[in-house]
Length: 70
Length: 446
Image (cartoon, rainbow over all chains, first blue to last red; front, side, top):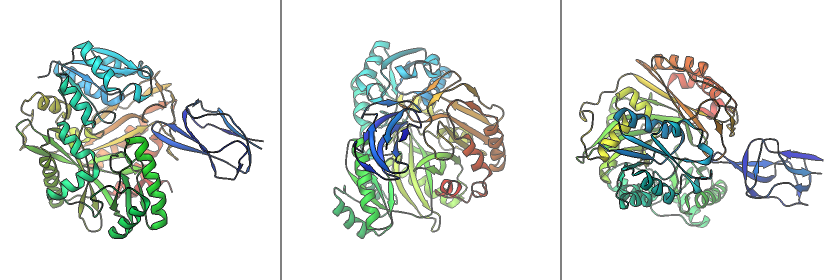
């Protein structure tokens, strides 16, 4: 199980991946927005996207869980 | 002079505009969102009106809420700062229709320059050089490919209604063009509400040099010198200086004349900035865009000319003569501005958070335009600009020396900041030599 966490306070602008997807290193999971900038959240490693913990419009804090990859 | 001014902005620029109102004895009204209640600009205004929740669309972009605040406080004029509604011709019209003075150019001038394709065509007709590029909007990928063939690679792809470098990218061939076009179109729709795209010939070694103009109440347009804004990351400015180390006397004469011609072509009134790209190899320059409002980096011009640009905006809006001799502008020395952003200094990713320490440098030749202070919270809703650290010296060397000391003396804790980047920039041979172009940041952060 690998956890993907937010690096900063941000707004979830777009959810790109879907639960159950096979994901590879460098794939975009969601796109965050903070301070007028879009920040793609990428997969490190590879696996199945087991769970997405955020939805579009959510506000995430630094360290919040975004996705779990198994 | 104006009796009162509502400042339709936030952070450092709201505070900076309010500083001039205080000096001139003008009553100031701030408007603020729930996220900004604790910022200095709210406290320093004579009156402050809460206009809505943190998202810009519900506060600083909400024309209705701002106009209601103006009515409630009986404000006589509106100063829009930069960004937000400053280049929104409809808002300017609404302000005037409400019987208030708009501190800016006519809505028509804003409109004519707001569409980049229209502005290019207009400038071309006025005899201002423009790069080979689109004369009408490019609507789909196939049209973009054909247009790129006609112009010749590499090309720059950008939003016609855009600004601030958002959605802009260069393409060296058809494949890159496809990606660049899609990116630009998505961003253009999202940020500017219009999918119109334009292509322009890309200049590989370029300096970004802009001319500060002032359209006086009597109709004359004058130039107050140039600024070099080639230090950019993601096509956004990080540091600026005047005079430009890449511009000699003859070239300066041509640049300033082109800036004046651009302003005259739209009957410009008030403070405006005409941006050019200067080809380092050929020394030719082309029109990029015009910003029809006060520019972020205006302090460097103020430092070398001694002219308060906001005061001139007020005077011109009130129909009064300029407070300086338009024919006797003589810049002295050298000035630089360093934008202090809440972002990590390596990858330049945003870093909001609570400010636990804020000790800014001071002394001869140092000016800090700050939007925050210790105890404030930097929220993710707005751009990452915390402060503008500006220095002035008799020579560029003296100004650089002051800048190094000032950057080292700036104590800021809480959010990560790009101050370490500025220290690196000031130590870099390329920047210090003055012989740099828009690739200077990429060279420092490979």
